[in-house]
Length: 417
Image 1 (tube, rainbow, N blue to C red):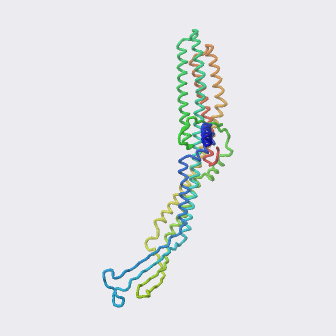
Image 2: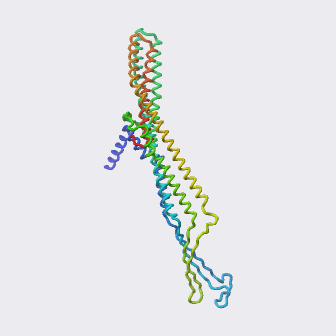
Image 3: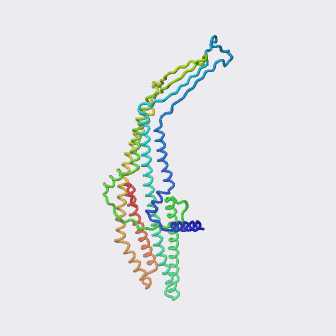
């Protein structure tokens, strides 16, 4: 009975937690823990660790046994007279001795590959965090626009009620009432589309968060960022070049390619096989036995690993070129993000300073005049649409400003949650 109560209580707690609004920091943290694509990318690290483990291993010794049995074809062996000789067994144990530091170079190459895999995973986290932040902002924007349209619809529904009363009193014509009803229907349809957008953005956000199925009561909360960057364009560029994990991963690839060149050059030098042997002849009551030492080494006359050495050299040049290309790309990304930030800042300040209050004042004035019969319904509709578009533009400007802040954080590999 107690177990059932605890189970029910835990289910209720989980349900309450699932219905609680999610902040942007919580969304990012949950995505970094549960996103399936990121979890798949994380396996690259243990895979690289396994390759490092394999690189540490030394060659196994080899055992060879050869036994000759005479009189196989009925030669009727007689030790004193037979021409075939006695039966014998030859046993050899070989050890392959790696030369030119091949094991050390294998381990160095594997270590650089492991470091590159870790940096690549960090870059995947950085990219995912930015995607979640953008999806969160899109959800917030959809909610804000839906709330704006909801207010507009409520206003026009009140206008319809007033016009119906005025029509029944004979103060306005029926066409005026129909115009207000049609306008209310148009805003109602826009609201339905906005609410659909809210649900779609919520589904996309939950998918990025790694939730197996979207929750019907999912909601987001929190203030939209309005801070300012604490660095100049030059400082942001330097920070990005120093901290970006994708650039660090490519630099590790250059180091890995350098180690690969040294490894392939070492592989051109043959390994040495050392062995000890035991030879036994079955003659009389006291078999003859000998021990020996064997030494084998391939002669690198034709194959000196020329192709692999050249491949490794070209891979290093390719990796160095990719580093330079990414450095140029990062500089361009920082400059572009900085321009986006400045434009978003100016646009947001312009809407707040010049448009938002004026559009609201015009809407109030026209509505007052319309109720007194001094303005037409078309004037009221135009003023309301202007105010609605201004508010939606303000919502988009706020979100776009926050988006540029998160973009600057992501480009410079900073945590701006």
